[in-house]
Image 1 (cartoon, rainbow, N blue to C red):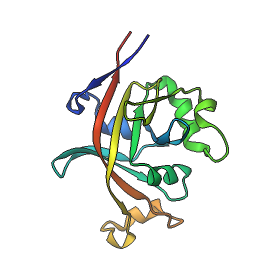
Image 2 (cartoon, rainbow, N blue to C red):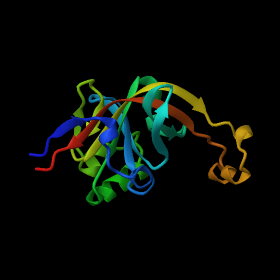
Image 3 (cartoon, helix red, strand yellow):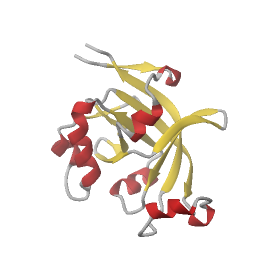
Length: 171
């Protein structure tokens, strides 16, 4: 059976532009008894405040926003291409209406810190929130960015310290 092993965040071999922007990810927050997940394709990895970090973006009307606000940690789960339909479902349906994991055929699991990820993922990045900031349109230097917000529903940016990275062992 394919099991996850802990790896150093520096051992992530994927191209982050492809990993996030093209392959997508599931952003998940909550406990196994009470969580939500959503597909995301905006974010990044880096080094900030002497810590390895990621940054993610969630619009306030998304159901996952409430979980990201309520809980101290979140996970990013990355999948092989064969899970594209599951990612599409998790990005187009609301957890208010359906059990997205069940409908997508995904199996929730917990990290050692009791944060939710999915057993079908190939890579999981677990993060502890260390900062958030609402996107302020007054700060847009490039006015064309405003076209991403026709409803003026600006994202909240979260910066999370990477506390664990898990990679599925090939079985």
